[in-house]
Length: 309
Picture (cartoon, rainbow, N blue to C red):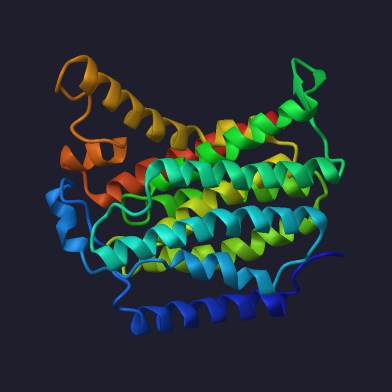
């Protein structure tokens, strides 16, 4: 059976705790710089250590089974994670929350997605989707779906990462959903990979809860978004992924609607601030209250996604 033995679970858990503690003590210069136009309550977050996503993206690599599927999933997560790492380093070095130009990031993301689709076709993977119980083979057009999922989900996860514990907590719930799907499909390699990643991510979440000792940074959020998207593709669960990602989609839409409304009304705002979790903060909600609300909704959407399979 492909999987992690109990001793490896324990070793990974203990090693995660140890490395996060060492990281916090040794990399105090890797601190977050908040947006000048952000919430006043977030100014106190200046100086919080960031780029903690490096650990939950890299450490599990030493504990997972390697197949063609898991290798490509890891390639996607690391590709987007490295892009986020460069973005984080620029923010730290320049002391401004700007990072890489948006168009450059988009082009690199498209490039990574293109490489992934090339190998996806080379491995003769499934290019069919099922609608109304009818299978439709999209062939090369399936690449558009891969491109859309990877780019949109990585950026959606990045937008969700704005409140302590929010993105990491919702991601853990999301990952549990994918693990259940992997078990239902009998894909033990992907299940073991997901389990290894989420042991490390759970330890990170404990450090990331309000008031956070550690942020995941763009390296973590971009990497996670790509990780979940490509995993759902290899599990043939794209529709379930979209349903389970409803909260992340809503957060993205709140930003798009805010921008469109602002331009249409020449300066008026639909929300006090976008993404929507910042609107709740501006309305007086505490971070832990926002976390609990989103966790409950995330659990509901994951259950619906699993029932869809």
